[in-house]
Image 1: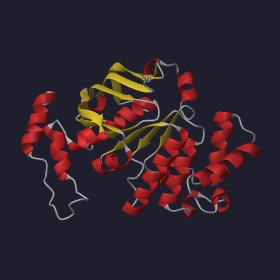
Image 2: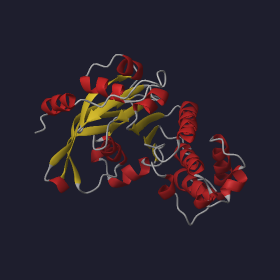
Image 3: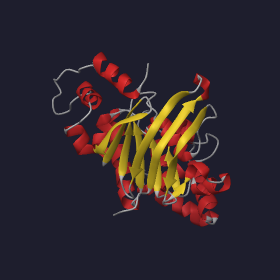
Image 4: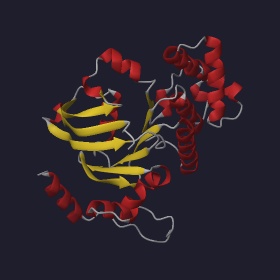
Length: 286
């Protein structure tokens, strides 16, 4: 049996800003090497909180109250800060949501890519620059020489996101956390970026935790999915099983509420209030 790359076990957290309101409720999920797992839920479901906990960037107002986050058998929650810094950006990488704010506006693209390679891989400036140029070609950027010399504001949103994908895979990480990386993009560019992430993931054999609110995106790129509501796992499993034969009424209602590409004339059905009442009762929310 393949050992899990990532195991989140009984992870619980509260918001001190909201007088100890739970934001994660005994969350369990696993990710195998080379697997793409979708972490999906509406706003406030806890998906970004899980991602930030893995990356060690939780805000001070969110406090972990129990559980483990094991990466290759090491609990990230009790790791020394120095050891955690060594892992982040090398073994674990992030594709952020907003490429506009993630890139340094005062630095050329080539410098930003090469600087990360020098820092994390100890490459010389010349070798790092050559590697950065190849990475831009790998993410299907035309004229990578020109892009190397460009500033972020000179690129489109889709091009900036390609740069961030290149940066995430630059050091061959074993885990990439993709935090809604297509949210700021139009539908056409979104499809291109999803195909690119999948292609890079397969080429590098990387495990990807893909955070999204869109089950349609999950269907396109993910192997498995974990569905959250109010910080609790509602359903999880292989994507085909969950989307074709959902077990929970909330999952069924979400699927019915989304557009169907195979039935473009079908109307959308809002999630019934009865489903939310059932969820709140199940979770124990007043």
